[in-house]
Structures are given as structure tokens and as C-alpha cells.
View (cartoon, rainbow, N blue to C red):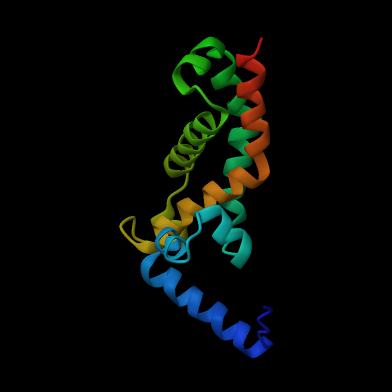
Length: 146
């Protein structure tokens, strides 16, 4: 069975999702729809659009990633066991790097306790997975299969 959605209904649905994301956050909205946050953002376009933050993520990957994880080759395998676990750890490190090097309250005028702040971190995670996920997982595989 095909469901046909008119453009006006689609716009209303997108607005409703945006309202829900602003109210309860990306994570809870995605779960409500039976998705993980990456699937949700891919499907509905709640992606990172602040170049100051994406530039920080790019800076980390260009200048810090290899330096931080190259010296820990064997520890990576023992500590993280799978490429997906390693990816999660790197995402946390990137988010912490951004948090420590970008004043979200001053530059974006948001409270660190807000849903908007939480959403930014899911958007940062999404950006990292989409742009560097395979590279990060491949680094783990490269280090742990030799």
C-alpha cells in the first residue's frame, strides 16, 4: 500500500517534527518514531548548520585524531573491542573538545541545560559520523588487525 502525502501535509509534518524536537529533543523524538538519532536526522534533515562548530570538528580530525590515537594502538583494541565502540569514544572526545573550545552560551545564546544544547550535541555526533565515521572505524580496524 502506498501512502500519498501532499506537499502541504509534508510541510505540516515537518513543522510538527521541528516543534517536537524543540520541545523534547532529537533523541526523544527519534525514539518516539522508532529510530536512532542518526536515522532520524538523515530522514528529516536536522543536521549541524553552524560552520564554527563543524570547523572545530574538522580541526580535531585534521590535527588531533591521529596524534591522540596513534600512540595508543594496542590499547585501542583492548579497551574498545569493536570499531563502533571506538567511534563512540572518539565522538565523545570530539564533543568534549568542542565544548572546551567553543562558548555555546556566548556565541549561540543557549543555556547548557536546554534541549537546544542537547540537540547540538546530537547534531555534532551526526556530523562526525557522516563525515568521519568510516575513517574512525577504519583506524580501529587498521590498528587492531595487524
